[in-house]
Image (cartoon, rainbow, N blue to C red; front, side, top):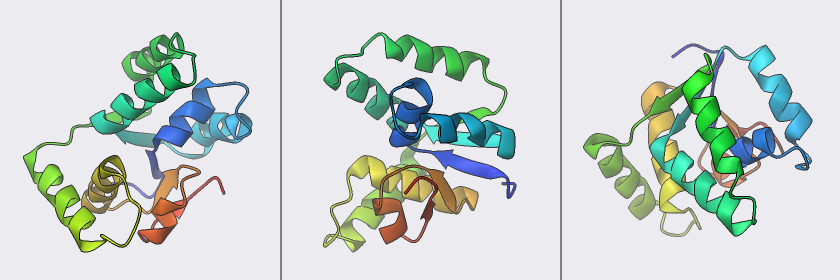
Length: 134
């Protein structure tokens, strides 16, 4: 993948959609600097759950609108191969508090050769990637 591609984590999705998030402005600027944002079906699932948990379920509609209409977003599916890599990642780093969704993100990023994540999650740094919002 191109150098100007960034992985879009759940916290990046949340910041982009939620105008009250402290990283909203930075996330809105990111598409002007990068030509491609990649996220996975696991991130979509996690973001939808987060919107419900934060009592803003209507924001799911905005997320799906972005997925359907954005020219810079690529949705990557976690199939059997990446699932197995995520499982291996989780088992190799049992001492880390990574969620399985984190591990699917790391597996996807490694597979695509990505180093940066639109994320506030320090787990990306622990896994050897660069979260852009810290």
